[in-house]
Length: 217
Image 1: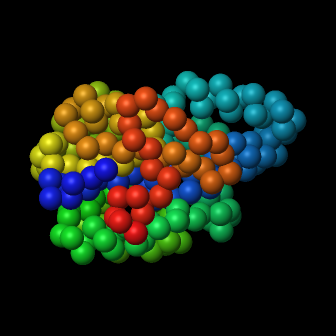
Image 2: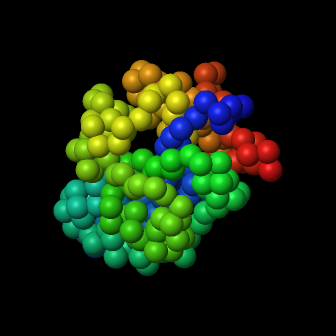
Image 3: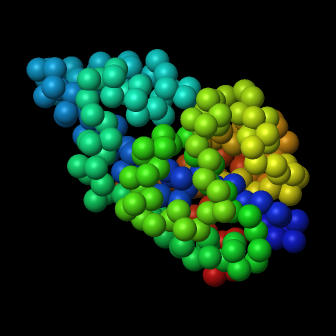
C-alpha cells in the first residue's frame, strides 16, 4: 500500500487510529450522560436527549473537542470524569510496533490530533505513546479542528511538510477529505476504530485492519 521511499513525514491521529475509540464512545455516550443526569436531576433518557442535541450543535468544530467548553456547558469536571474511567483507554493492536518501525526507517512521526491537550495528557500518561513522536500537535494550538477549512494551511506554518511526501492516517473521513483537498496524497483510514463497534467502508480511502498491513509484519 505504501512506498516508504516516497514518504518523509507520517502524521497520525490519536483516538480511533492509535487508541481504541471505545474509550471515547463509552465516555461521551454512556459515562457523561449518567453523570449529567445525576448532576441535573434528570432521567437517563432525558439526559441522553439533551446531550445529543448539544453534541450535534458543535460536532466538527473545535468546541466539540474542547474540555473547557464541555466542562462549562455541562457543569461537569470533564478531565476528572475522564480520569475516573481511564482504565478503558487502550492502544490498538500493533500500534507500538508500527511506531517503532517508522523510527527504524527514519521517518518524522507527528501526532496531529483534535483531542484537547488535557485529554492527550491523560492518554499519554496511561499509554506512554508520547515517547514515539517527534512532535505532538493538537488542533487547539491552531484554533481550528482538522476538518475545518484552513487547518492544514495553518499546520504548514508550524510543521513544514511536503503534502506529496506525507502519509496521514485518521479514522475520520471528514478529516481525510480536508487533508485531501489540501493536497496530501497518501491517506489511509481505519476500518474498525472502536473495537466494540461496526466496521467502516469508504469508496476512496484504503482502510486498515491492522498496521501490520503497511509494515510487512
